[in-house]
Amino acid sequence: MLSSASHHVKKIGVIGGGASGMFAATTAASTILAQPSNISSSVQVHVLESSSRLLTKVKISGGGRCNLLHDTSKLPSELLEGYPRGRKELIGAFNKYFSPTDAEEWFTNRGVRVKTEKDGRMFPITDSSQTVIDCIIQDADRNRVERRMSSKVVSIDKVDNRFLVGVKDRKNDGRVRTEAYDAIILATGSFPPGRILASSLQHSIAKCVPSLFTLNAKNHTKEGQILHDLSGVSLKNARLTLTVDDPGHDTKKKKVIVQEGPLLITHHGISGPAVLRLSAFAAREFHATNYRTRVAVHWAPEAGAAGDIETLLWRMTTLFPKRYVGSACPPVLTSHGSGAGAQQSSPSPAVPRRLWSALVAEAGVAKETMWCEASKKNVRALSQIIAGFCLDITSKSVFKDEFVTAGGVS
Image (cartoon, rainbow, N blue to C red; front, side, top):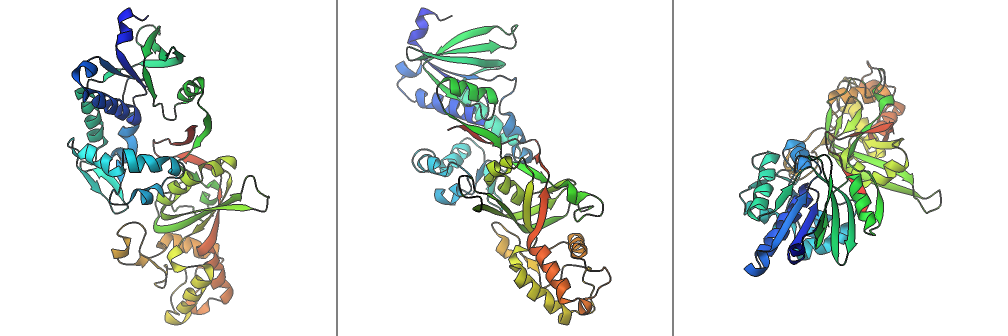
């Protein structure tokens, strides 16, 4: 219950001890501590975390390295192009309140040195997410943020401009106590109970759907199919195209979503940056199909459209007539890869040898066929498979241990 003196104490409750919750807590506390002492001395900031650990998703992010930021040398408008949703809402935040360069300075001023990789991702130079975790927790401790672990928030009621928060203490027989706060910060991420709490405060909720996943294509990984025994094969650059009905329009109207980048073939289908970006930008479209749809794969987008590839491949009939078609990707098809710094790399075959042999077989070209024996029909079929192979998607998988959603408080 509340003591009579508690009404004179400014209290802020942060619900959720993840990255956003801890960062919000230490920022709020440091801002208040900068005020005159008669104000700052009476303020409390509590982080209410339902589990026994803080920043658990930070621990696994970026494969345990923590992908902290993205190339801060770019303008905010360029960085916002990488956001599948919410760009308009972030314009003000990026330009007026807390820019990516502000975020970089925040960490570097606290001893976390960062590096920028070729694809623009920024990591701590230690390549360890623990560096980031330690930095945030130490800053919160300096700012006198109180961490309350195993404290599950079960209800929030607003009474007389204060928030009465029901907190279930998981360590003490699950008893529910009531804490009163003058302000609360809801930072529960994709945790479903957080959306229930937000709804109780009259916030509208956009349905949450998975937004970072790999794609399974089990019909193509079976023995005798194109992706069988190709697990581990990677391409520097591939283009993925998802075409779906455009909701709210005539059924003939189609929505086309395209992403390009490195691609990895797995035991179950495809993964890699191109797939993850497509899953993020087409999160709701994939969900609407129940993750059963078709994705067109261009295995060598730098070579152009199917007609361009056909012209290039036909040159092989005179340049290297005695080479076997299925032996290796011909030198007329090369790739520099994608991403920052890619233009400096030397060209390499656009399609790895094992995948090339599978594409040739899929096109119906016999294994012993030499380029001088290849017909126009053979070359056209191969060109079309390279430029637009239709991959039947049968389901999705979570990317490593990370789980990201699209939706939430709107």
